[in-house]
Image (cartoon, rainbow, N blue to C red; front, side, top):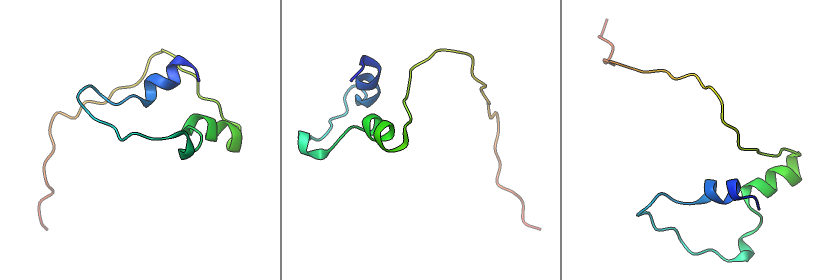
Length: 61
């Protein structure tokens, strides 16, 4: 497993995760590659960001 894969599976600090055994099956990354032929690769690049400044409930008609 690549370092990027193990980092993606780590829980945030302070969050406890249940202990799992190897009997749980392959990782999600392995399953996607074996079953669908998809391989995830970590990359950095520009992304679009949307900022919602205000939201209101719609008024009744």
